[in-house]
Length: 359
Ligand code: OSB
Ligand code: MG
Image (tube, rainbow, N blue to C red; front, side):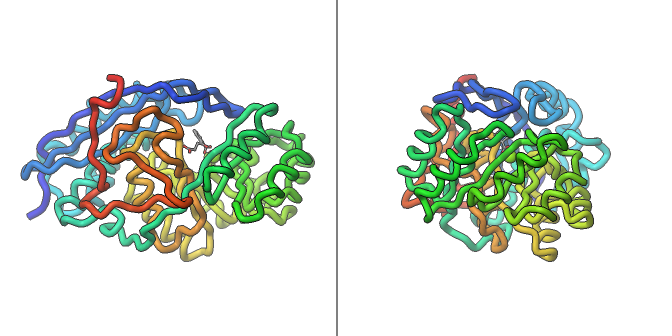
């Protein structure tokens, strides 16, 4: 009994972004990804997406390193194996150190496969309850376009706007722009741009009205985050620092943050993510689902995750046409009235059309 993994294939794709995505770390003009297709003995297909970037500017892994690890190291561990639960993928991958994004891409495809095998939507398969996921967009603008971009995002009925900040951001300008929209939640994301010397500048962001400040300091700066949490009323949220269950335990032990960003790619997939969600739930840590400029396959998995009962803060969910002229999934993701409605079909609930990608 169970699902036998008959075939695992990889398709490398790339697409130009509609407009450059500017952060303090990198400007992204084009996005590569690897779409994973897992086929069962009964002919069912599950889909995953590798979310590593082309170069290691955000995480250590790259598209190239993942292509190697997935094809040569992970695929042989799974091929022809019969699984009774998708949790067994994480166990099969334990002999391989790190390489979480490579592991996640294959693991997520197997979870899609199991939900299809059970004939239920993936969000139901993992115990999700929310059927309309609040949409959130990211404003990653240059200083001179910041206010225009905030106004534009606000006009598109997103329930949440995340703004990239640096120690040089104009605090008064931000406060003015945000105060015009009392009904929208604003997050700030520093991508680790502050340090000990700019600690006092961070404190100035406390009065702007942000719902949270994401990753003010570098990923290993646990003490600085603890200090910021102690001194600021704005909740501190960790993104880059959180790569595993153990990192969340450490964060809780050090009181380094109130909220975390869930990124399944960085955690190694569903198994580790669901463990982390339970740990956060039982410790009163807030959670939301983060994005990394992904295509629809990854977004579909992320939408299922956001359906879990304890995830109430809006995540990085914009519509397919925000980053892309055309997405790979059918139908595309669409924001209506500030929300994205989950699909009722089995698995991730979207078809995948690789003809819509540049191969
Ligand atoms: O820090 O959340 C981040 C994109 C690439 C890498 C890191 C981050 C981001 C984003 C984009 O903020 C979120 C999205 O895909 O909507
Ligand atoms: Mg972030």
